[in-house]
Image (cartoon, one colour):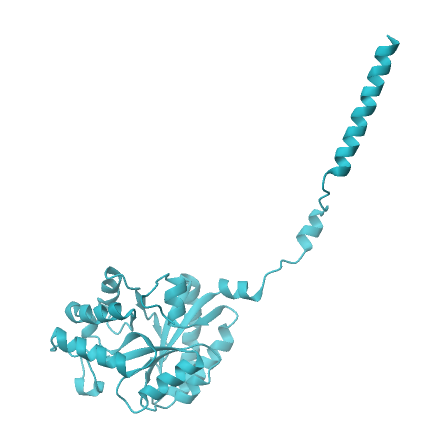
Amino acid sequence: MKDSRKFNRYLLIWIAVAALMVTLIAPMAPSVSAAESRDKPTDTSSEEKTSQRNKVVIIIDDFGNGMKGTDEMFSLPIKLTVAVMPFLPTSVKDATRAHERGDDVLVHLPMEPRQGNPKWLGPGAILAKMSDEEVRQKVEAALDNVPYAIGINNHMGSKITGDERIMGVILAVCKERGLFFVDSKTNYRSVAGNMAYRMGLPRVENHIFLDDTHTANHVLKQMGLVNNLAKDQRFCVTIGHVGVYGKETATGIRSGVEQIKDDVEFIGISDLVKNEMKWNSNPTLP
């Protein structure tokens, strides 16, 4: 009986020693109180914050003819998408300047409107009476004339963007060259977006014009709407212009950038297409 009690006593001692050894050998996890965990600041990099912001693409149309506001637009502290009309005195200069500044370049292709004189469109315009081959030649020549172009958007063009035959030719050239088409939405019945989608191209459309009224205050107001649209749909594409009121438009954009820069990230159209729309071109966009 004594031996049995002694054995039990030794057994209990060994169990206690074993438990102590396990405690000492096991890695010690730092103890963090709920309060410490709650109060500890989150280590979020500025890059992560930027990537979480809504995206805004600002396209500026009508470059290529030394228009008013050109220098003011190029001095804006954001990435722009510069839409250059082909075959004009400063087409190559403006496209090169944009590229060197880090902006994206589009061919701002003149297209026939439903109303107005086609002669107002300038050189290289796409007209409804043209054959498929004529349209193709015009589009290819325009792309060859504007260096660094990664896509096309329409100058005017309310008649052409509603024409499936002609848009089919334009979009086919884009696809062959690894480019895309941005519908300026001068025609609410445009077929361009749906056709682009069916052809495996990104559907890229203008959401709002900045300078439909030609004052800096109106442009600033529109920039507020751009911010709201970006919140609703994660990104917003907007269009302004150089030209007679180009300086006023640039002033309004500059003020708007200051107003909404903490809410959005200003990106080029190529960034939108690649990163937000997940479209990979062939050849690859710059």
